[in-house]
Image 1 (cartoon, rainbow, N blue to C red):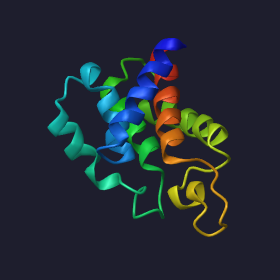
Image 2: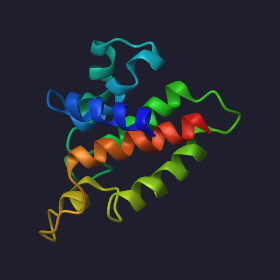
Image 3: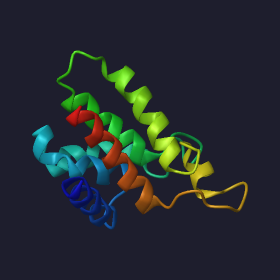
Length: 130
């Protein structure tokens, strides 16, 4: 668990200079074999969730992109992503849409960006270790 938290916290540090998707991707740079420039480009369209807070949380999108690069199991990535999404939602206050997580319409934030980044890393690591 300590290793998970270390990577999750490193992703939060990355978040200070980029969007949530990029932060999660950068936390897995060594494993993906991609350099920072490539990962930053890959995650560049996912800041504030897909579609500017209207779509899925960028941190979760980054986790699923990394899954696609790192999944070596016989289980299809889309099936793992479905499990990850439920776990992410459970950890993040019951939502996966960026605007819902930030409480744009309700005024009640369910999960901070830093915590979404942590949750994205944690759920991905759980499934990579499975």
